[in-house]
Length: 107
Image (cartoon, rainbow, N blue to C red; front, side, top):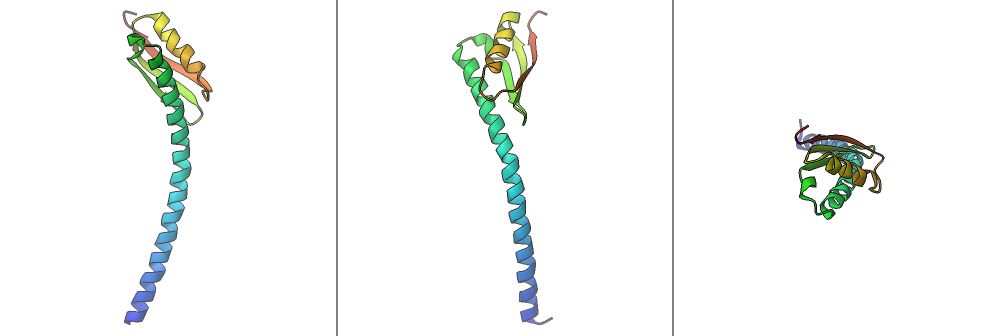
């Protein structure tokens, strides 16, 4: 194979791989869009929980799926504290639903 043929082949392969990389970037960008949305909602809920200044809400973990459903887990000292976390999450902009898996200490 001549040097010119080798260079041409490498250029064609490079162009094909570059196009594949660009296509992969588009897919990743779209997927990250969902994650950014989710992390924004998660951050809003966590901020609301923290703004209550109740140490009882510190052990509650927040996660959000791509559909805007918030999942609460962890422990709360009382049923009222667990219910308050759910209420705060439900009242957060962008939240479409709340699923609570919060365990109440002593129950």
